Image 1 (cartoon, rainbow, N blue to C red):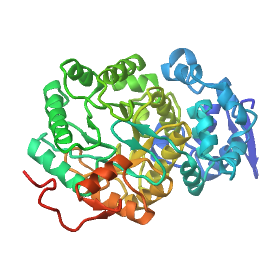
Image 2 (image 1 turned 30 degrees about the vertical axis):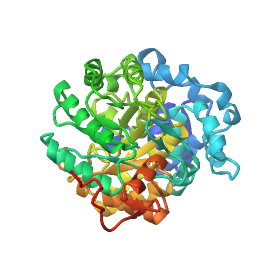
Image 3 (image 1 turned 60 degrees about the vertical axis):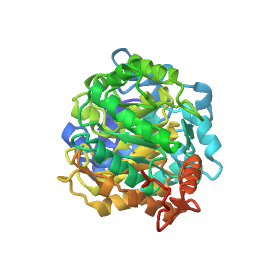
Image 4 (image 1 turned 180 degrees about the vertical axis):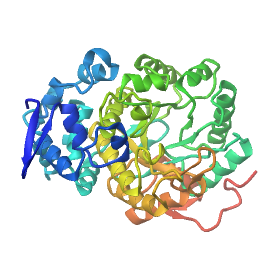
Length: 458
């Protein structure tokens, strides 16, 4: 494709000066792209851009980086690690033909897994822009990404849950009560993960030892994580703290990652440090990453690239470090970026599909802030759609209300609903533990009463 490219619609002619502009104008409407000044000015212009994008060769994304190779470490990572042999089956396709290929009966989990190293984030973002909601769900449902640490996550017929027992003062009793509540609802197989109120070495070490004692005492086949900064995690590893997973928020540009205080070499150092502890029993995926549309824009580090494409580029960062878990915190940043329930829903299924195409174990924090035009029914809708799409894991927050971070997410009850309605089970090792502890029977059914020797025992 040669730029500028153009398309006439009636008496109006739309001209797109670059691949970056075309990608932005082809994106479904969201408030953040409007705020950034990159969105289409009308629905008609958006459709014109989508038609032009459908005719763009996939190979062109290797020839025209949206952010220059010389100035951005993420661009260099994307292009330097691109697997041309894996790309070969779709190398001659346009974006529109690639969409058709993805929807074919013959394109199964094995074909998608083989293709993943050959896809760049921009390719995944581009095809997502041409997909309907049902297209995104169908394609994602065909992807299978399995990871492991103390249990195995992402197997067919399974839905895992991050147990999120945050407390505004890091109170040990409050956190412990939330962990117990979540375990009794069958949650926690993805991770027991705490956002600390204070990002400090003493706080992180205290919380890690609290969870580690619980995991060891009851022999729970799961992993812990305190979601402090990666540099804090490196310090507590040096102090001998029981670190299972290292957490970090990541973004799709070098400048946005710099705003988080991270670089690619720093993430590699953290991965290697965590692996050196050899705390996993069934695998060594030791990283946990969170992303979210709008993070690069909020840092003024988007380089004129639309939110969804910046988000997909973050998945290249995550993919490099073989994580156990990745999730988009889809509605967390606020209505300036995703205005209402409709925009949050679309972003959630876009993120999930693009990440799965790129080979990531993708989950979603199905969430919104209280000043967004959204409510819990919107989250129920997205929760159900992601369940159908094969989402790897969701969040379990007491009452769906995170009192520490001040936003609305999904509850322990919500995960039980989704497992019931779709016939899903926890990770197999965790399921066996739940049955041994007589918390559940048959993978899904919560037992009505607890025996005296269960978790409530002193």
